[in-house]
Amino acid sequence: MEPVTNPLNPTLMKKTVKPLVLLTICALFFIQTPAQLKMPVAAGISSDIKKIIEDYPNRFINLMGEVIMQHPQSTDYECNFKVNGAEESFITRYSAKKEICSFEAVMMTTENFDKAKQKFKSLFNQLNNLSVRFADNKSLHLKGKFEEPKEEMKFTSVLFSPEPGQEFLKKLKVEITMQAVEPMEWKVKLLIYDREREDEERGAVRE
Image (cartoon, rainbow, N blue to C red):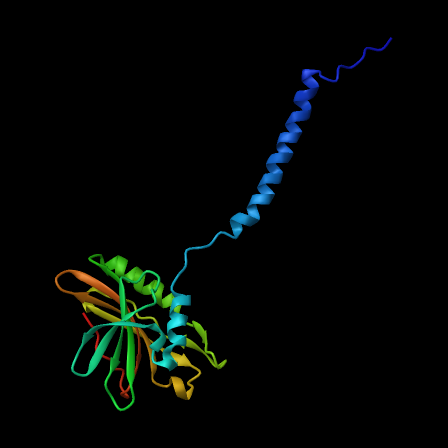
């Protein structure tokens, strides 16, 4: 007479449980992997700068907050839109026949030249060839030429111009600067402004 196999035999149960455990682990891995891939990546400033430039034709009116300071020929306003990573930002409107405006954000203040240089380069990489589409479906992309900061130079600037050169954007300039500030600090700034003159002179910049 053949022996009857015990269905509760511990050896058989161990052999069965191991494959089940492996299958469960594999299933969990494949279920979680897509979710992990969809996790948000640390955001840069590209989308924020697009939002600011999109309001440039409106003279930044939708981004203006309370008055910070009044000057003889201009007024500084709080910017009610927070640029990712900015230490501070403000909008300036100038008294003129045709209203001139500018946006300025301090992106980093540090005593470390290498950190400031790294921030400057990161901003360039995010802004160069940045595409912006306006409400009327017109579009532009920014184009600039990188300049390597040098500690002995004390000041470095990259100017971005909009392409194609449409009429309503002919005065628009986007600029990043890295400047030595007394006593021992470096400031990295982002500026968006009207260029009224034929040279590359920008509007007044607050230290």
